[in-house]
Length: 414
Image (cartoon, rainbow, N blue to C red; front, side):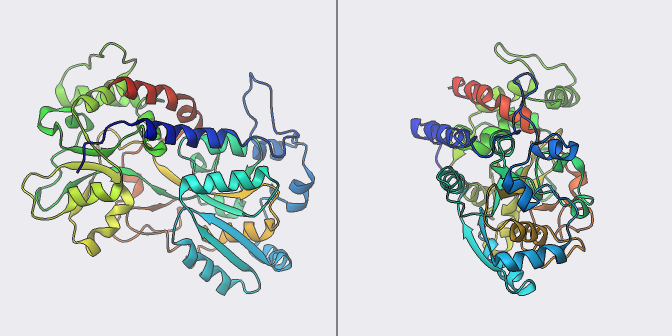
Protein backbone atom coordinates (compact mmCIF):
# COMPACT_ATOMS: atom_id res chain seq x y z
CA UNK A 1 0.00 0.00 0.00
CA UNK A 2 1.34 3.41 -0.92
CA UNK A 3 0.35 6.71 0.61
CA UNK A 4 -0.46 8.28 -2.69
CA UNK A 5 0.76 11.88 -3.03
CA UNK A 6 -1.09 14.37 -5.16
CA UNK A 7 0.83 14.73 -8.40
CA UNK A 8 0.74 17.20 -11.24
CA UNK A 9 0.18 14.32 -13.63
CA UNK A 10 -2.91 13.26 -11.71
CA UNK A 11 -4.36 16.75 -11.78
CA UNK A 12 -3.64 17.10 -15.47
CA UNK A 13 -5.25 13.73 -16.23
CA UNK A 14 -8.49 14.77 -14.56
CA UNK A 15 -8.37 18.19 -16.17
CA UNK A 16 -7.85 16.62 -19.60
CA UNK A 17 -10.92 14.46 -19.04
CA UNK A 18 -13.05 17.54 -18.43
CA UNK A 19 -11.48 19.37 -21.34
CA UNK A 20 -12.10 16.51 -23.76
CA UNK A 21 -15.74 16.44 -22.73
CA UNK A 22 -16.01 20.18 -23.10
CA UNK A 23 -14.78 20.08 -26.67
CA UNK A 24 -17.92 18.21 -27.74
CA UNK A 25 -20.68 20.78 -28.24
CA UNK A 26 -20.85 21.06 -31.97
CA UNK A 27 -23.20 18.45 -33.31
CA UNK A 28 -26.70 19.26 -34.40
CA UNK A 29 -27.14 22.61 -32.76
CA UNK A 30 -30.28 23.76 -34.57
CA UNK A 31 -32.91 24.33 -31.91
CA UNK A 32 -30.77 22.60 -29.28
CA UNK A 33 -29.81 25.64 -27.30
CA UNK A 34 -31.55 28.16 -25.13
CA UNK A 35 -30.69 31.56 -23.75
CA UNK A 36 -28.08 31.79 -21.04
CA UNK A 37 -30.60 32.61 -18.31
CA UNK A 38 -32.55 29.42 -18.92
CA UNK A 39 -29.53 27.14 -19.31
CA UNK A 40 -29.18 24.29 -21.80
CA UNK A 41 -32.32 22.78 -23.28
CA UNK A 42 -33.17 19.12 -22.80
CA UNK A 43 -33.76 17.76 -26.33
CA UNK A 44 -36.16 15.00 -25.26
CA UNK A 45 -38.34 17.41 -23.31
CA UNK A 46 -38.32 19.94 -26.14
CA UNK A 47 -39.16 17.25 -28.69
CA UNK A 48 -42.06 16.02 -26.55
CA UNK A 49 -43.32 19.60 -26.25
CA UNK A 50 -43.04 20.12 -29.99
CA UNK A 51 -40.63 23.05 -29.60
CA UNK A 52 -37.53 21.37 -31.02
CA UNK A 53 -36.55 22.01 -34.62
CA UNK A 54 -35.57 18.52 -35.76
CA UNK A 55 -32.53 17.83 -37.92
CA UNK A 56 -32.77 15.48 -40.89
CA UNK A 57 -31.08 12.71 -38.88
CA UNK A 58 -33.40 13.19 -35.90
CA UNK A 59 -36.40 12.87 -38.21
CA UNK A 60 -35.15 9.85 -40.16
CA UNK A 61 -33.87 8.00 -37.09
CA UNK A 62 -36.99 8.55 -34.99
CA UNK A 63 -34.68 9.08 -32.02
CA UNK A 64 -37.41 10.79 -30.03
CA UNK A 65 -40.00 8.11 -30.80
CA UNK A 66 -40.92 6.47 -27.50
CA UNK A 67 -43.41 3.81 -28.57
CA UNK A 68 -41.66 1.58 -31.12
CA UNK A 69 -41.80 -2.15 -30.50
CA UNK A 70 -38.99 -4.69 -30.63
CA UNK A 71 -40.56 -6.22 -33.72
CA UNK A 72 -40.74 -2.90 -35.58
CA UNK A 73 -37.16 -2.03 -34.73
CA UNK A 74 -35.90 -5.50 -35.68
CA UNK A 75 -37.24 -5.17 -39.20
CA UNK A 76 -35.54 -1.79 -39.58
CA UNK A 77 -32.36 -3.06 -37.92
CA UNK A 78 -32.08 -5.91 -40.43
CA UNK A 79 -32.10 -3.35 -43.20
CA UNK A 80 -29.25 -1.50 -41.49
CA UNK A 81 -27.48 -4.81 -40.90
CA UNK A 82 -25.16 -3.79 -38.08
CA UNK A 83 -24.69 -2.01 -34.77
CA UNK A 84 -21.39 -0.85 -33.25
CA UNK A 85 -21.13 -0.52 -29.48
CA UNK A 86 -18.49 1.23 -27.36
CA UNK A 87 -18.64 0.00 -23.76
CA UNK A 88 -16.69 0.46 -20.54
CA UNK A 89 -17.38 -3.18 -19.63
CA UNK A 90 -15.69 -6.34 -20.89
CA UNK A 91 -19.07 -8.02 -20.48
CA UNK A 92 -20.25 -6.30 -23.66
CA UNK A 93 -18.86 -9.16 -25.76
CA UNK A 94 -21.22 -11.60 -24.05
CA UNK A 95 -24.13 -9.22 -24.54
CA UNK A 96 -23.25 -8.88 -28.23
CA UNK A 97 -23.23 -12.66 -28.68
CA UNK A 98 -26.61 -13.00 -26.97
CA UNK A 99 -28.07 -10.21 -29.11
CA UNK A 100 -26.84 -11.85 -32.32
CA UNK A 101 -28.49 -15.11 -31.27
CA UNK A 102 -31.82 -13.43 -30.61
CA UNK A 103 -31.70 -11.11 -33.63
CA UNK A 104 -29.99 -12.90 -36.51
CA UNK A 105 -29.19 -10.70 -39.45
CA UNK A 106 -27.93 -7.82 -37.33
CA UNK A 107 -24.17 -7.91 -36.84
CA UNK A 108 -22.80 -6.56 -33.57
CA UNK A 109 -19.33 -5.05 -33.30
CA UNK A 110 -18.51 -4.53 -29.60
CA UNK A 111 -15.56 -2.53 -28.27
CA UNK A 112 -14.46 -2.81 -24.63
CA UNK A 113 -12.76 0.53 -23.91
CA UNK A 114 -11.74 2.41 -20.77
CA UNK A 115 -13.80 5.48 -19.87
CA UNK A 116 -11.20 8.08 -20.84
CA UNK A 117 -10.28 6.32 -24.08
CA UNK A 118 -13.93 5.79 -25.03
CA UNK A 119 -14.90 9.42 -24.61
CA UNK A 120 -11.81 10.65 -26.40
CA UNK A 121 -12.33 8.21 -29.28
CA UNK A 122 -16.02 8.86 -29.84
CA UNK A 123 -15.53 12.63 -29.56
CA UNK A 124 -12.65 12.65 -32.01
CA UNK A 125 -14.59 10.52 -34.50
CA UNK A 126 -17.76 12.58 -34.17
CA UNK A 127 -15.97 15.88 -34.65
CA UNK A 128 -14.27 14.45 -37.75
CA UNK A 129 -17.62 13.36 -39.19
CA UNK A 130 -16.72 9.68 -38.79
CA UNK A 131 -19.81 8.14 -37.24
CA UNK A 132 -18.42 4.79 -36.13
CA UNK A 133 -20.16 4.13 -32.82
CA UNK A 134 -23.92 3.72 -32.70
CA UNK A 135 -24.28 2.98 -28.97
CA UNK A 136 -22.18 4.15 -26.03
CA UNK A 137 -22.25 2.47 -22.62
CA UNK A 138 -20.56 4.75 -20.07
CA UNK A 139 -21.16 6.56 -16.77
CA UNK A 140 -21.95 10.27 -16.62
CA UNK A 141 -19.72 10.68 -13.60
CA UNK A 142 -19.84 14.44 -13.20
CA UNK A 143 -22.78 15.58 -15.35
CA UNK A 144 -20.58 16.47 -18.32
CA UNK A 145 -22.23 13.97 -20.65
CA UNK A 146 -25.64 15.47 -20.06
CA UNK A 147 -24.63 19.12 -19.91
CA UNK A 148 -22.21 19.07 -22.83
CA UNK A 149 -23.14 16.06 -24.99
CA UNK A 150 -26.86 15.45 -24.59
CA UNK A 151 -27.93 19.09 -24.61
CA UNK A 152 -25.64 19.67 -27.62
CA UNK A 153 -27.32 16.69 -29.33
CA UNK A 154 -24.10 14.78 -29.76
CA UNK A 155 -25.39 11.92 -27.56
CA UNK A 156 -29.08 11.06 -27.34
CA UNK A 157 -31.10 9.60 -24.51
CA UNK A 158 -33.34 7.05 -26.20
CA UNK A 159 -36.42 6.70 -24.00
CA UNK A 160 -38.66 3.72 -24.81
CA UNK A 161 -41.82 4.31 -22.82
CA UNK A 162 -42.67 0.65 -22.21
CA UNK A 163 -39.30 -0.05 -20.57
CA UNK A 164 -38.96 3.25 -18.72
CA UNK A 165 -42.36 2.67 -17.12
CA UNK A 166 -40.48 0.19 -14.89
CA UNK A 167 -37.85 2.74 -13.82
CA UNK A 168 -38.13 5.57 -11.30
CA UNK A 169 -38.30 8.92 -13.11
CA UNK A 170 -35.46 10.31 -10.99
CA UNK A 171 -33.11 8.05 -12.96
CA UNK A 172 -34.56 8.72 -16.41
CA UNK A 173 -34.93 12.51 -16.55
CA UNK A 174 -31.39 13.07 -17.84
CA UNK A 175 -30.25 9.60 -18.88
CA UNK A 176 -31.20 6.14 -20.09
CA UNK A 177 -29.98 4.09 -17.12
CA UNK A 178 -28.84 0.47 -17.25
CA UNK A 179 -27.80 -0.38 -13.70
CA UNK A 180 -26.31 1.20 -10.59
CA UNK A 181 -22.99 0.73 -8.83
CA UNK A 182 -21.75 2.46 -5.69
CA UNK A 183 -18.59 3.58 -4.00
CA UNK A 184 -19.08 1.72 -0.73
CA UNK A 185 -17.15 1.42 2.50
CA UNK A 186 -15.96 -2.14 3.11
CA UNK A 187 -14.57 -3.88 6.17
CA UNK A 188 -12.94 -7.24 6.87
CA UNK A 189 -15.65 -9.64 8.06
CA UNK A 190 -13.01 -12.12 9.31
CA UNK A 191 -11.50 -9.54 11.68
CA UNK A 192 -14.90 -8.11 12.65
CA UNK A 193 -17.28 -11.11 12.82
CA UNK A 194 -19.85 -9.17 14.83
CA UNK A 195 -20.35 -6.54 12.16
CA UNK A 196 -18.81 -3.36 10.88
CA UNK A 197 -16.63 -1.38 13.28
CA UNK A 198 -17.95 1.77 11.59
CA UNK A 199 -21.60 2.64 11.06
CA UNK A 200 -21.62 6.45 10.97
CA UNK A 201 -19.48 8.20 8.35
CA UNK A 202 -18.12 10.66 10.94
CA UNK A 203 -16.41 7.80 12.76
CA UNK A 204 -13.90 7.70 9.90
CA UNK A 205 -12.60 11.07 11.11
CA UNK A 206 -11.84 9.77 14.62
CA UNK A 207 -8.27 9.10 15.86
CA UNK A 208 -8.84 5.32 15.84
CA UNK A 209 -9.02 5.38 12.03
CA UNK A 210 -6.16 7.75 11.36
CA UNK A 211 -4.16 6.25 8.49
CA UNK A 212 -6.53 3.28 8.31
CA UNK A 213 -9.10 4.43 5.74
CA UNK A 214 -8.31 3.54 2.14
CA UNK A 215 -9.61 5.36 -0.91
CA UNK A 216 -8.50 6.76 -4.26
CA UNK A 217 -7.32 10.34 -4.54
CA UNK A 218 -10.15 12.55 -5.84
CA UNK A 219 -7.56 14.64 -7.70
CA UNK A 220 -6.46 11.67 -9.79
CA UNK A 221 -9.86 10.30 -10.74
CA UNK A 222 -12.95 12.07 -12.09
CA UNK A 223 -15.37 9.59 -10.52
CA UNK A 224 -13.85 10.14 -7.10
CA UNK A 225 -13.90 13.90 -7.61
CA UNK A 226 -17.62 13.60 -8.29
CA UNK A 227 -18.07 11.36 -5.25
CA UNK A 228 -16.61 13.86 -2.79
CA UNK A 229 -18.61 16.63 -4.45
CA UNK A 230 -21.79 14.73 -3.65
CA UNK A 231 -21.24 15.31 0.07
CA UNK A 232 -21.25 19.09 -0.41
CA UNK A 233 -24.39 19.67 -2.49
CA UNK A 234 -28.15 19.36 -2.24
CA UNK A 235 -29.52 18.30 1.13
CA UNK A 236 -26.57 16.02 1.94
CA UNK A 237 -24.76 18.63 4.11
CA UNK A 238 -27.88 18.91 6.28
CA UNK A 239 -27.99 15.12 6.57
CA UNK A 240 -24.34 15.04 7.58
CA UNK A 241 -24.88 17.71 10.22
CA UNK A 242 -27.83 15.82 11.68
CA UNK A 243 -25.87 12.57 11.65
CA UNK A 244 -22.99 14.25 13.50
CA UNK A 245 -25.33 15.49 16.21
CA UNK A 246 -26.94 12.07 16.51
CA UNK A 247 -23.53 10.43 16.98
CA UNK A 248 -21.92 12.94 19.33
CA UNK A 249 -24.88 14.68 20.96
CA UNK A 250 -23.80 18.16 19.95
CA UNK A 251 -23.99 20.48 16.98
CA UNK A 252 -21.26 20.37 14.35
CA UNK A 253 -18.90 23.35 14.37
CA UNK A 254 -17.58 24.34 10.96
CA UNK A 255 -13.91 25.15 10.47
CA UNK A 256 -12.79 28.28 8.69
CA UNK A 257 -13.24 27.84 4.94
CA UNK A 258 -15.90 25.12 5.31
CA UNK A 259 -19.21 26.47 4.08
CA UNK A 260 -21.26 23.45 5.09
CA UNK A 261 -21.05 20.05 6.80
CA UNK A 262 -19.95 18.36 3.58
CA UNK A 263 -16.81 20.43 3.34
CA UNK A 264 -16.20 19.91 7.06
CA UNK A 265 -16.44 16.15 6.65
CA UNK A 266 -13.97 16.22 3.76
CA UNK A 267 -11.54 18.34 5.77
CA UNK A 268 -11.65 16.01 8.77
CA UNK A 269 -11.36 12.93 6.56
CA UNK A 270 -8.33 14.40 4.80
CA UNK A 271 -6.78 15.45 8.13
CA UNK A 272 -7.12 11.84 9.30
CA UNK A 273 -4.57 10.86 6.65
CA UNK A 274 -6.42 8.33 4.46
CA UNK A 275 -4.31 5.92 2.44
CA UNK A 276 -4.58 6.77 -1.26
CA UNK A 277 -4.22 3.97 -3.81
CA UNK A 278 -4.56 3.79 -7.56
CA UNK A 279 -7.31 1.19 -7.87
CA UNK A 280 -10.35 -0.36 -6.24
CA UNK A 281 -8.77 -3.77 -6.63
CA UNK A 282 -5.86 -2.75 -4.40
CA UNK A 283 -8.27 -1.44 -1.79
CA UNK A 284 -10.44 -4.56 -1.91
CA UNK A 285 -7.43 -6.85 -1.50
CA UNK A 286 -5.95 -4.81 1.36
CA UNK A 287 -9.23 -4.68 3.23
CA UNK A 288 -10.62 -8.11 2.39
CA UNK A 289 -7.61 -10.43 2.75
CA UNK A 290 -8.25 -12.95 5.52
CA UNK A 291 -6.00 -13.47 8.53
CA UNK A 292 -5.50 -9.80 9.44
CA UNK A 293 -5.68 -8.64 13.05
CA UNK A 294 -6.01 -4.89 12.51
CA UNK A 295 -7.13 -4.39 8.91
CA UNK A 296 -8.08 -1.05 7.40
CA UNK A 297 -11.49 -0.16 6.07
CA UNK A 298 -11.78 1.21 2.57
CA UNK A 299 -13.99 2.87 0.01
CA UNK A 300 -14.05 1.06 -3.33
CA UNK A 301 -16.36 0.04 -6.15
CA UNK A 302 -19.30 -2.05 -4.95
CA UNK A 303 -18.68 -4.44 -7.85
CA UNK A 304 -15.58 -5.79 -6.07
CA UNK A 305 -17.93 -7.72 -3.81
CA UNK A 306 -18.43 -10.30 -6.53
CA UNK A 307 -14.70 -11.17 -6.38
CA UNK A 308 -14.91 -12.42 -2.79
CA UNK A 309 -15.27 -16.08 -3.68
CA UNK A 310 -12.68 -16.24 -6.43
CA UNK A 311 -10.04 -14.32 -4.45
CA UNK A 312 -10.78 -15.73 -1.03
CA UNK A 313 -11.62 -12.30 0.35
CA UNK A 314 -13.98 -11.52 3.21
CA UNK A 315 -15.12 -8.09 2.07
CA UNK A 316 -18.33 -6.88 3.68
CA UNK A 317 -20.13 -3.62 2.77
CA UNK A 318 -21.23 -0.95 5.23
CA UNK A 319 -24.58 0.77 4.92
CA UNK A 320 -23.20 4.06 6.20
CA UNK A 321 -25.20 6.66 8.04
CA UNK A 322 -26.33 9.03 6.68
CA UNK A 323 -25.10 8.18 3.16
CA UNK A 324 -22.52 6.23 1.24
CA UNK A 325 -22.43 8.99 -1.37
CA UNK A 326 -23.80 9.40 -4.88
CA UNK A 327 -24.40 6.39 -7.16
CA UNK A 328 -22.44 5.56 -10.30
CA UNK A 329 -25.16 4.98 -12.89
CA UNK A 330 -24.26 3.00 -16.00
CA UNK A 331 -25.91 4.80 -18.87
CA UNK A 332 -26.70 4.08 -22.53
CA UNK A 333 -26.62 6.64 -25.33
CA UNK A 334 -27.29 6.66 -29.05
CA UNK A 335 -24.57 8.61 -30.82
CA UNK A 336 -25.87 11.48 -32.91
CA UNK A 337 -25.76 11.07 -36.71
CA UNK A 338 -24.94 7.37 -36.30
CA UNK A 339 -25.44 5.12 -39.31
CA UNK A 340 -27.51 2.40 -37.61
CA UNK A 341 -29.99 4.20 -35.32
CA UNK A 342 -32.69 1.53 -35.38
CA UNK A 343 -30.24 -1.25 -34.60
CA UNK A 344 -28.88 1.00 -31.84
CA UNK A 345 -32.32 1.41 -30.31
CA UNK A 346 -33.00 -2.32 -30.54
CA UNK A 347 -29.66 -3.10 -28.89
CA UNK A 348 -30.37 -0.67 -26.05
CA UNK A 349 -33.77 -2.26 -25.49
CA UNK A 350 -32.11 -5.67 -25.42
CA UNK A 351 -29.47 -4.56 -22.91
CA UNK A 352 -32.18 -3.10 -20.68
CA UNK A 353 -34.24 -6.30 -20.63
CA UNK A 354 -36.77 -5.50 -23.33
CA UNK A 355 -40.42 -4.92 -22.76
CA UNK A 356 -40.89 -8.35 -21.17
CA UNK A 357 -37.89 -8.36 -18.85
CA UNK A 358 -35.87 -10.71 -21.08
CA UNK A 359 -32.63 -11.10 -19.11
CA UNK A 360 -30.55 -12.70 -21.88
CA UNK A 361 -28.81 -9.37 -22.48
CA UNK A 362 -29.14 -7.93 -18.99
CA UNK A 363 -28.02 -10.86 -16.86
CA UNK A 364 -24.33 -10.15 -17.39
CA UNK A 365 -24.69 -6.86 -15.53
CA UNK A 366 -27.01 -8.14 -12.80
CA UNK A 367 -24.25 -9.29 -10.47
CA UNK A 368 -23.43 -8.82 -6.80
CA UNK A 369 -22.39 -5.23 -6.22
CA UNK A 370 -24.67 -3.88 -8.93
CA UNK A 371 -28.37 -3.05 -8.78
CA UNK A 372 -30.96 -3.10 -11.56
CA UNK A 373 -32.93 0.11 -12.05
CA UNK A 374 -36.05 -1.72 -13.24
CA UNK A 375 -38.69 -2.57 -10.66
CA UNK A 376 -39.46 -5.87 -12.38
CA UNK A 377 -35.89 -7.29 -12.29
CA UNK A 378 -34.64 -8.82 -9.06
CA UNK A 379 -31.07 -7.96 -8.00
CA UNK A 380 -28.44 -10.69 -7.78
CA UNK A 381 -28.79 -13.19 -4.94
CA UNK A 382 -27.20 -11.90 -1.76
CA UNK A 383 -27.71 -8.22 -2.62
CA UNK A 384 -29.04 -5.78 -0.07
CA UNK A 385 -32.20 -4.27 -1.58
CA UNK A 386 -31.26 -0.93 -3.07
CA UNK A 387 -34.21 0.73 -1.34
CA UNK A 388 -32.59 -0.10 2.01
CA UNK A 389 -29.26 1.51 1.18
CA UNK A 390 -28.34 5.03 2.24
CA UNK A 391 -27.50 6.65 -1.08
CA UNK A 392 -27.59 10.30 -2.13
CA UNK A 393 -29.30 11.37 -5.35
CA UNK A 394 -27.10 12.09 -8.35
CA UNK A 395 -27.97 15.52 -9.73
CA UNK A 396 -26.21 16.30 -13.01
CA UNK A 397 -26.41 20.05 -12.41
CA UNK A 398 -25.21 20.04 -8.79
CA UNK A 399 -22.19 17.84 -9.50
CA UNK A 400 -21.32 19.57 -12.78
CA UNK A 401 -21.39 23.04 -11.26
CA UNK A 402 -19.58 22.19 -8.02
CA UNK A 403 -16.96 19.57 -8.83
CA UNK A 404 -14.20 22.05 -9.57
CA UNK A 405 -14.74 24.13 -6.39
CA UNK A 406 -14.81 20.96 -4.27
CA UNK A 407 -11.68 19.57 -5.92
CA UNK A 408 -9.98 22.94 -5.41
CA UNK A 409 -10.94 22.75 -1.73
CA UNK A 410 -9.43 19.26 -1.48
CA UNK A 411 -6.27 20.48 -3.19
CA UNK A 412 -5.82 23.28 -0.67
CA UNK A 413 -6.02 20.80 2.19
CA UNK A 414 -2.45 19.87 1.21
